[in-house]
Amino acid sequence: MYNYFLKRVKIISFFLLIICAACTNTSEVKSTQTISTPTSQPINQDNTSLKNADYQTVYQDNDFTVREMFLGNVAGWEWEKFVMPKARIPDSIHEFNLGREMVCNSNSQDTYPCKESIELHLDDDTLNTFTLESEYQFGDGKFILKKNQQIIYTGHMNGGIAPPINSLVRYKDDIAFDYTDSNYDGVNPNFWRAYYILIIDGNNTSVIESAFAPNVVNNNLIYFKEEGKKDFLVYNGKEIGSRYDLVFNQLCCWDGPPVQIHGNGKIIDFFAQRDGSWYHIQAGYQN
Image 1 (cartoon, rainbow, N blue to C red):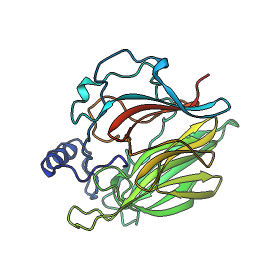
Image 2: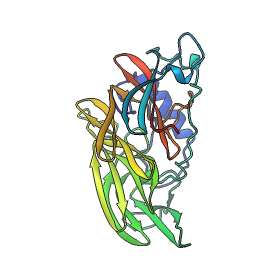
Image 3: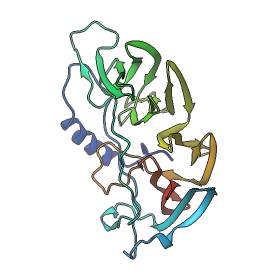
């Protein structure tokens, strides 16, 4: 299902944890940050040219369409054979991150010694400043979110083997981001994990459970929802397109081809697996 795969081979996870620890900024404040383990990747097995004609429309509402193209069967670690579809769009709307460059004061007695802020420039030349404050680096543990120094949300995050905040997007004059919570401690065998999207609207907040990867298409929110071990798109509050066994959404410590979820404000572009096969999917306005 979602992009973190804890059931992979323990030996692989061990070496990946060592690699991630070596590239993480050191701090006296303990972080739960480690690294996620790659899974099988899509490949284009015959290396043929990928043209627009190869896409099949699976959903249409006026000019809004969802189209997908078959890429090939699951092929383990053979991602080096992957051929990027020619219709792939650049990722141009994910200009902000939270939880990736937090500054932690190890001598502070504050409940939330780790902090990071981002600024949104508005049309009237003012700013909206969002500040994430947490117990541990990368946002793990108890956290608060402030907007212009006012607390608007409190919660708890635990990314387990990856940063808890995976995707953040500007939504109107505010932000929306997904985050993970879990009981991961590297020891407890009774593991659980939950995914949320937090949406800011003025000084109000709303949370969507079992959801990830918020994006914007034509100024409207589009995101993935998990239900019954399937992932699907939701746009304007309505399910659209096909359901998938897996949507690739891994960001941390990935050295394979750039197959993460992309968005440009008109289209969301991603790779997903269904019934043992991989597809390239685009949802939005092609013209």
